[in-house]
Length: 187
Image (cartoon, rainbow, N blue to C red; front, side):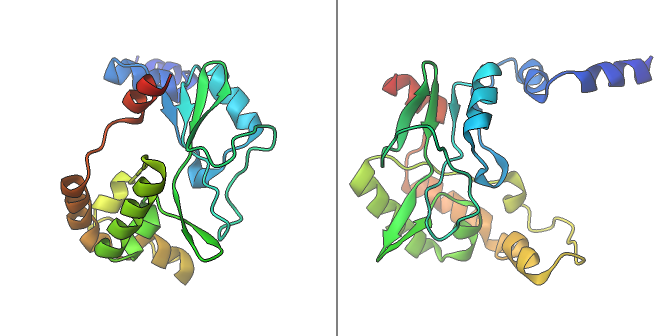
């Protein structure tokens, strides 16, 4: 019956469901709000992920997660366990501040030409740039929830109408490849 099938599906891990749908192994993970932790690394390795991309060492945002028991310095890609890597999200250093410069709200808030200058600077210093975008950031017609406070509304909805145009320009200006392909060359 339909109810029995639904119960069975919800007992599966979301990763297993995605792998069944796509026919490919899901290799990467990014924690919500960059909430990486040593405990999460252990769970991700048990779930057979190959890499995480949740670490963002921005000193202006203290709420992001941290890795306490791993040495990595300023490396953008480093091994956490035998078969598990961290692909750190980029930050842009301005004066004494380290600002997240990987996508999301920063990509929507900052004019594209300034964001591009930041990417160019990061690539010049690291030869690596890791970008992300949420699918909802490309949908300016998404329903609006007015019951949330002003700060959250601003962070979520600001500049949604220009994000797709900026994203298309980003894809024209830079060559990107999936992190799993980058990692295959690093291993």
